[in-house]
Length: 276
Image 1 (cartoon, rainbow, N blue to C red):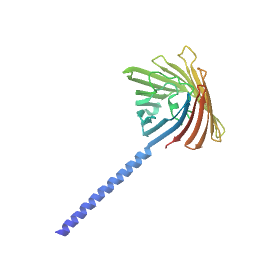
Image 2 (cartoon, rainbow, N blue to C red):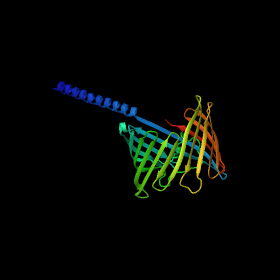
Image 3 (cartoon, helix red, strand yellow):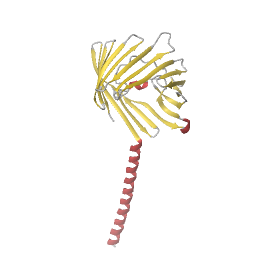
Image 4 (cartoon, rainbow, N blue to C red):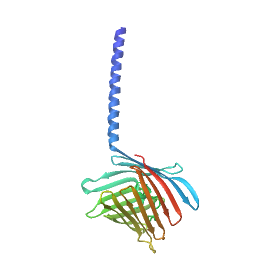
């Protein structure tokens, strides 16, 4: 009788072990699939800013982007450790129509300044100016559409979740280095952005915006030169007659050091690190 009980116990343990093994294999396979399909991007920067004879050490930007298939989540951590969800959306691709429909919290297609908040896109902390829609802070919850036309790309965004429940419609048409943005608040902006490559490792990036709706000329522009010896130089100017300039050096593949100044007597030293 004791032997029968021991045999049953062994059989039960064997079945449990098989179940546990199957569960572990399933978890490993699931983790492998998710990890393979998941993209992580993260970056952070530390800055020493001097303005009006006062020096502050800040954390201008810490951001993490997670993408799984057509889902995207972007989180920003401010200097006071406040978490903000910048993007949370999913995209449906309509296949042969070359059209994406985006649902959720997403950047509004107005101008080119939204990405300039990221140090890896905008290495220099100062921007000569920003001309953007005053309705949103760059993102809003709504429905977006992006489609490739014959010689241009059309981006459209609609939301009724702003100020509060105010309908907002923005769209941007871009072709090559040029783009034009409009919204239903009578904002109109012309922008330009291009990279000019000389050889293998020398490149010049030029960007800017011009406000088509302003009674006065309102604009900003900037050029950034990347050199083969890891030095970066920039210079910019805006309609307020403010000139900004800077120099940087790429210490490693994912770490760079920047010093930039402006006519408004503000200078910044910034270290930026790509996390993953």
